[in-house]
Image 1 (cartoon, rainbow, N blue to C red):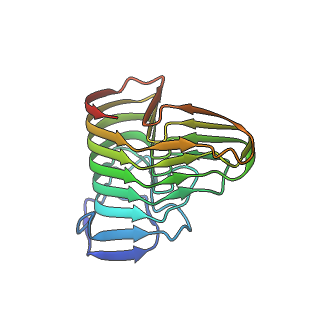
Image 2 (cartoon, helix red, strand yellow):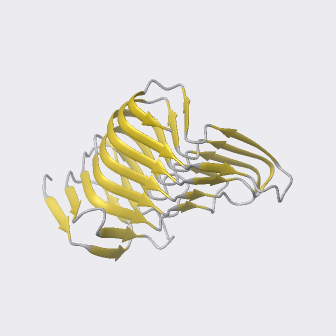
Image 3 (cartoon, rainbow, N blue to C red):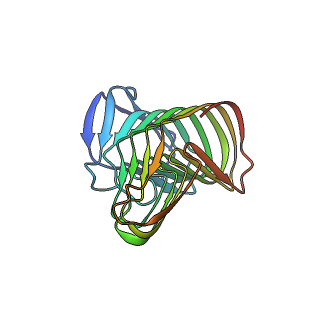
Length: 219
């Protein structure tokens, strides 16, 4: 515990899972160190309520998953710094939550970008998307400089009803202090090919039972 693991610049074709140890995992910078899961699994998973790791200086791409295709973060008090979650998907389940990044618990985030992630659930009578970009589920903590852009929630394969709560950022039962947040060009749609009905709530931002605050918000 307490060790720092440095990762050199480059692209690494794998998934990262952190459990059991409080470490700092540090890439050479989000612009030069990339982890690509090749659509085989989530790209980053922190799923251990007893640890508080720090992850810094990476781009996470090529992830696939129902809860956080790019990243699933559910630890004691993790720190996320200088990270990009880009080009992740949710396609194999009928509901998608936080396709770019799913967070639960307490977290400290700085300089995080979530972009170009696509939630397009598998064909079903009813499709649900909560935060095609980011979903905060019962989260506390602070976020300083978050960009959520060009994420897509697509419910075109719903044969009856398709629901999208925020193509950008969805907040549920959270109390987070946000500073400098940009939510732009996030899109929800149904192409009409199945004749289904759709409900779209909050293209960039949606919140339910939430007590988060914002200082500097662009939508």
